[in-house]
Length: 117
Length: 115
Image (cartoon, rainbow over all chains, first blue to last red; front, side):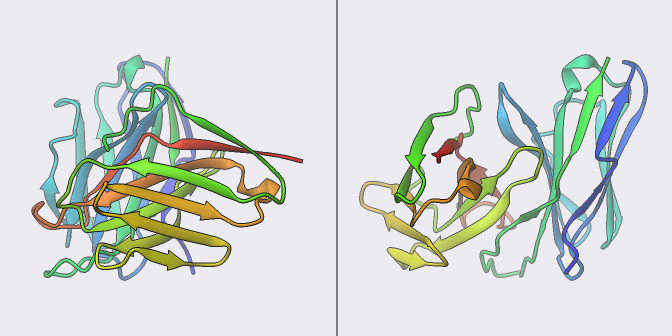
């Protein structure tokens, strides 16, 4: 079965440029999560969606960050303008969520390694 | 516990020995716990989960133990192999959070398997 697919795997760009990260969740999953991982701060939840609706974006660092989920099979995380401190590995994860929480594990993609020069 | 990410404790294990990785959590309302394995250059990979109505669950070569009294979770790996070298994270879910499935991750433990 195809897992969570992220693109690109690596992105190097200059500060000030717009960066768009993409994620395709596992088919049938209706909950999607964006994380950022750095050596200093570990794994941080940025935002998550249930049934394409953003539920909690309290982890989004600032207004330069935005995320969308236009349909059940695609999500984007955009940084505009990018800064060197945004350099990190960004992960997308998906899970199956029911109205009554059923505690399903999240499954992660292999991430996008982002370097802002 | 909250992810700190600043310094990873390291567990060195001889190949063939059993490994025990520990995790302390602070939220007594958490009712679901997961262990993840992260290899270099990859995303966290689901290993095993356990619900709070259980105190032990076994998988293939892995066992998770949950002690709710002292808020402690452990992962035991039997007959550790070189492929088990990775960073291991525990994660927990608090059902009181709006629209469940949101996890809080621990800081991780690095496991190094010596041949």
